[in-house]
Length: 327
Ligand code: PBG
Image 1: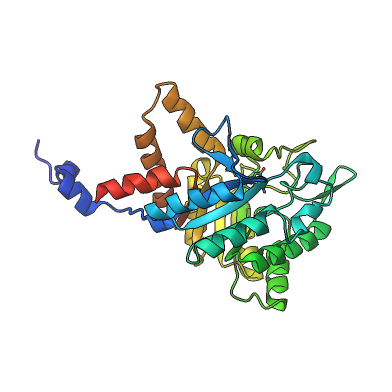
Image 2: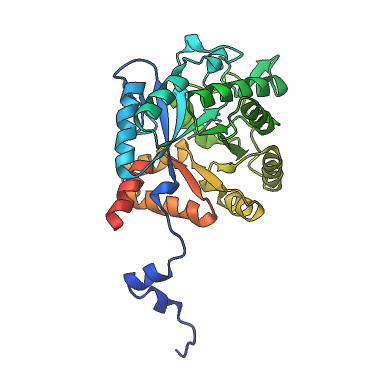
């Protein structure tokens, strides 16, 4: 054939492929979520998330040390609380000696340079398993936002670098920014879960925290997966209210949304490679359907290629190991 264009020439050798590769992934871009549980020397397996554990604060220190050794220096904290500490108002979320503030201080003491993100929403603290205060079967917006702003102060005081509201209430970013500024925490950032869809892919996470909604679903606050223009509306609002970074969640069924959001904002864009996305690859590998490492690598690069600057992923440590081996 007489062809002017033979794109295969650029794929001829590994060196050429590396030279023309468009997407890079650095270990600095990975965030490791950590599941906390009360007690000492606790390390509890999560059935739907092989390789991920709920750990007591003392054990978390070991996990952070391992991560730092691999170059992963950013962590997101999620508490798994006993049912006895949950109520309609999520009061435990304001306890300055609660599981999250205690663990924050312990990590900060030992690892002054790591970046600590905290998730702000009521679901780990709510006896209803919802992200907000429930009254007569409704999730109250404005009353919830007040609690979220207070919770953010508790986290900031304990040493959080970045507050990450995942609740999808309206107006929470502005309220949190105002509360932080009023108390002098002008340096504490906000990474907003701006675009969070009501998704089946959160299933394993809810097992990890035992936080599934006790009634109904989260569709009156989390987004409808049929929409993208609404995503841009959420981004604009959060920018206006003072978000420093925005997030799209989940990642894999929403790569188009990540790309659109990236084109629409000048803020750094995060994507959350969620628990169900992790669990499916693990299960597929166990069933002999797919090679786990290659599936992980392809998945995380695809999220970067779509436009994510930051990736929250339960694969952070194996991915960091893989990246290290490339050099
Ligand atoms: C709750 C929250 C959820 C996740 C992060 N924060 C679950 C939910 O909204 O039900 C999901 C994370 C994951 O699935 O990995 N505010």
